[in-house]
Length: 325
Image (cartoon, rainbow, N blue to C red):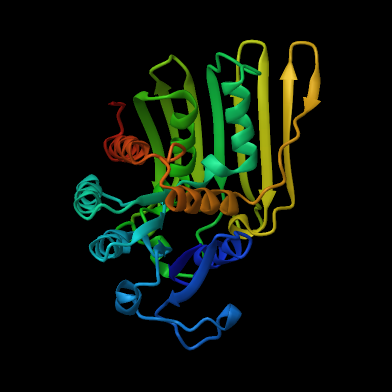
């Protein structure tokens, strides 16, 4: 059993908390939030971050804070000897990520970054199809992630605090595509910015080193009536996997999710496990910690590589030109 200090009490922290309730070897013992004037589930008593760091009974710190706070909170947790789970993105700057890695190694703690698509049932199914040979030689990908700017906090609109749709949404598909097909050779991106200068709609073309091409779109500027939508189409010469999901605001209340396999002579519905992606993710991280096992699903080298690709996309957006990796 691992005791967890949950840092934050916004949408994603509450999502993590609900997932932990279904994980037998994880126990959220306290929550750290600036807004302590509220009741917490299970009669949990909130703590300050300093109290959590000093509490010897807490094994893992789960950081669900705005992105610009990640470095500070991760480093303090590392210095306190705590293993760490942190929401993506790790950081908005490569230099920040490098400072984090130095501290993680110095204090010999484990860091897990929550790239949740790698644990999402539909995306896991796509990866399994490729790894098992049920589809091969994928040469074209179309991926979308469309919604509105989250309304529960203003920090999402600030490019220096959130990175906008680029780091809140687009990073999901960029990470999964490299997980699926390998390294990127070249990026080219176009987009629009919100009134504060954050990229709020991005379309990126990735040229992969294996010769495949991916067209990736993300938006936080859809009308309020537009359902949160994510899709992924993987095409080979004579076969296409086509996935679509529709939900309410910001992935709440999923209303429809389907995946279809199109071959030269047949159309079939693909069945996938009815699992909670966040429960999959957190139970895996806790299992790795509890059993001292290697994190092979989201290794830190992949996290750092995804950051490199994101910085190349950002450079392409700003310069209006192709960027070689």
